Length: 174
Image (cartoon, rainbow, N blue to C red):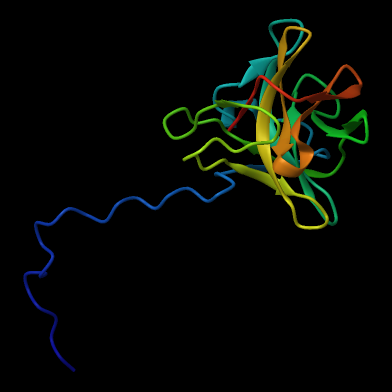
C-alpha cells in the first residue's frame, strides 16, 4: 500500500465549481394531508393572488403517471392547483414546492411554447407520454399566475378562478 502524498498535489488550487442544480431545481416535498403548509421554507413568492396579499408559489403536482407544474396557494384548501382539461383542478396528494432563487433563476419572456435561445428552463414535470413540461408565469385579469408551458402546448396554461386559461403570447418561462 502506497502512502498518500503530502502535501496534497492540489493544495493551493481553487476548489472545483459548485455542482449545478438539478434540471428541476431543489424542491420541498409536501402532501395535502399535512396540517400546515411550511411557507417559511418556500422563500420569496413569485406572485400574489387577486387580493394582492396572499402569496403564490411555483410547484409540481405528482400524479401516478405524470408530474405537472402548478401554482401553490397556501391560503386555499387544498393549496395545490393544476391547470388541466379546461379546469382548475384541486390536487390532492403529493406535490413539491420549488423555492424561487433569484440568484440562479430568472423569468424570461416567451410565446407559443418556445424555449428562448441560449436558456435552460427549469423542468417542472412531464406528460404521461414523456413530454417535458416547464414552469411558466402569465397574467390573467391583472394577476400573475404560475402554470406550465411546453413546445407541444404552443403556449402557457394556468389555473385561475376555477378555469384553465391558455395564454399564447406575453408570458414568462422559468
